[in-house]
Image (cartoon, rainbow, N blue to C red):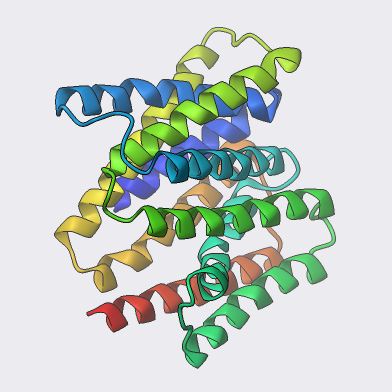
Length: 272
């Protein structure tokens, strides 16, 4: 899980470095470079590329590319650690959508955990005047779409291989990102070529090692470590981009992560 979170943090760092590029172009490179890994895996293991629940797979891809684009757009206006922590609000919206769409129940104590996380958002916005309202709005809507992604993946279930699901997401993102980036295209220079392909590299291996971690260790023990991504990303932002986090920003981020960790730990124990 540490390798996974470091990989995702490196991907976030590259996104922040490429702020001079349009978000659609970053989406294109992030997705296109990942296709080498997903197609390679599917072909090597003779897994049907088109999958079974094609309609849901396409919807998952469209919802996913919307969330990813909004997140990349938000990094131009927010410190990268703040953007990542706010995007992690996705599971809360997933729980709300699950109640509405899947008729699932949420225990009263989970609402307390959600309130703790939302209080972090209020602290961020209410006490840190330096944060962009536009950037906060972008990443907040991104988190809403992340919640929808979780619900759609739940509906897909085990009928399709996880890499098939990811591959659909990457194919659709490549097409959407590539077409919408045409009018804003900035050709990478020098080391930037390595960086844009690093987006797919770190994104893919972050996903793979996260999956391996959940397969090896009980969810209750490993799930909280997933939020190390926020810590690593925040440290990268300070070290590489000289980002400054106020006391209120750090407190808000801490409340968000605390609420989310408590919720994921509680849910995991229920399943066991």
